[in-house]
Image 1 (cartoon, helix red, strand yellow):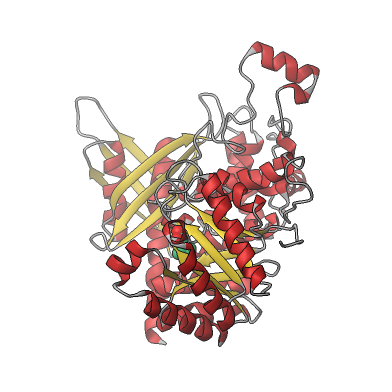
Image 2: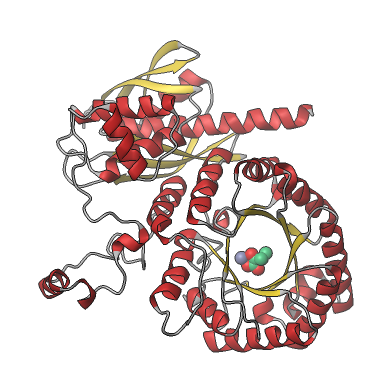
Amino acid sequence: MTENKNIIIFDTTLRDGEQSPGASMNTSEKIQIAQQLEKLNVDIIEAGFAAASPGDFDAISQIAKTIKNSSICSLARAIDGDIKAAGEAVNAGGKGNRVHTFIATSPIHMKYKLKMDSAEVIKRAVHAVEYAKTFVDDVEFSLEDAGRSELPFMKEITQAVIEAGARTINLPDTVGYRLPSEIKYMVEQMVGFVDSIKSDAIISLHNHNDLGLAVANTLAGIEAGARQVECTINGLGERAGNAAMEEIVMTLKTRQDLFPGITTNINTKEIYLASKMVANITGIEPQPNKSIVGKNAFAHESGIHQDGVLKHQETYEIMKPEDIGIEKNNSIVLGKHSGRAAFKDTIAHLGFPDLEDDKLIIAFNRFKAICDKKKEITDDDIRMIVADEQLNENKTFEVEAIQISDFSNGIPSAVVTIKHEDKLITDASIGDGAMDAIFKTIDRITGYNGTLIDYKVNSVSEGKDALAKVNCKVTFDDGAHTMLGHGLSLDTMIASARAYVGALNSFLSVQNMLEKTQQK
Ligand code: KIV
Ligand code: ZN
């Protein structure tokens, strides 16, 4: 069995995570997450599925150009067109990245989905790996639905793809069906088989969470010799999601007694920021009682627990909040008299050390404007102000002012002023409510008709004067494009208008990118 005890962390937040209903992200959002994954020291970032759309291709290429320390990977079906797109996208950065190709190996998938016999599946898999090798050295092959595949066939196809050049063999429990004892057995068998054919290929796991067992299954596989694990931040992913990276990494760290010497390269102090960023961008907040990163994960409600923790932290805490990057006290850090240097210092400490000067000035001015109206400014407020500026970099249209009348017995109406190409445009509309009137007015001014399909508002901190954070999903072009929008303000209406306009700006970026691709 393998002596190597370092577990390769393969993060698929930007690919499988994006397959979570409603989690689609634009290129600049994906780049931000990739940069945070790099800070986490993730070994491999699966940045998308290059053949899925020009937007995916563009995002993977740009991430491959931006990220220096993690390897960038694209998924590809065992189809030449997919592999070519994946190979070209990951090579955009001009360095050794990875192509991840897959075909289903379970009887049910082969019979009903692929309509292929096992010999055809092996032929396709071998060709896919050989073709992928013409683009990159590092090829991963997945036996889709390995969880329901038969071991003799799994071994046969594994030998064939290893001979074709695959160095990572991934065994997805695609439908989240298996129990830890079964995964342990499957991995033991497959690690033993790979050793028996004298290959140094690595066995990898990719577990889905349909029965709530994804992390337990992943840990059982690590015990059995798997040396790569595929996971996502906050456990995002198709249906019930994937194994949550923060849970796997913190379990390995906390239970070294049971995983002696097993390590990862993850800088756990970046976990909390990564979780916040993914939640903020996708609008999918982890449930409050979610392990490691949920709002209540380190909150001790009962007096007995509080007393115990104060006397000795380990009485009721098996990990320290600081280990995942939660500062001890999320209290007032800056006030209205603070200067730009103090603001810069604080945001560097909060995880944004490289903010460019122009963005720093904009964020600082927003912070000052908020200080005039809000008594206490917390770390989370400041973090959200900076994140909001980063998420709304495209300012084709900008909300300047809003005035609403929303009488319980009258007709709700809104007057909105939007800045576009340095001109201020004002218009008004009535609606079914104040929010509807605002969105209708924005449509009139911009000339684009959006349809709001999801809307969420959260408060960033506590108190009546808390900042409102709005995430909305808007479709354009009769439902052909769905975009996420983000807005932050002390006023919920303004935050909503900003989120709606943000979604429109993202849509315009995508249109722009599509036009450029077509002109090539
Ligand atoms: O769940 C799955 O089987 C996958 C593969 C494509 C790796 O996501
Ligand atoms: Zn998956």
